[in-house]
Length: 75
Image (cartoon, rainbow, N blue to C red; front, side, top):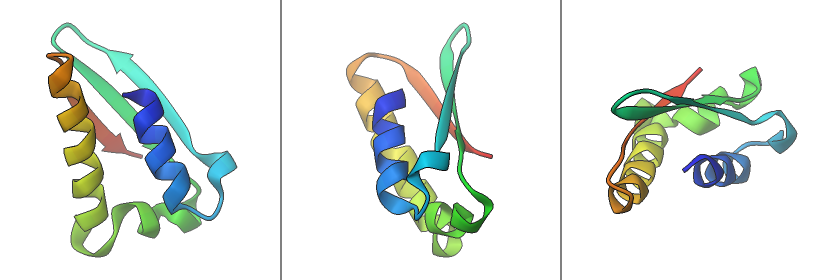
């Protein structure tokens, strides 16, 4: 999951070297925290949050295969 999110984010931004994905494992879910450069926030979120919603959908679909619950937070 972490690598998938990192690959998607790096392909969207201008500064791929500043993309950081942190994985926090809880009891029932996995939280993925995505950090990008401030100037790239708009590219990751998109108009009205469409790109962020699409990223969350793709990561959740990949997590269903492993029977896990994943939450993606953009920081």
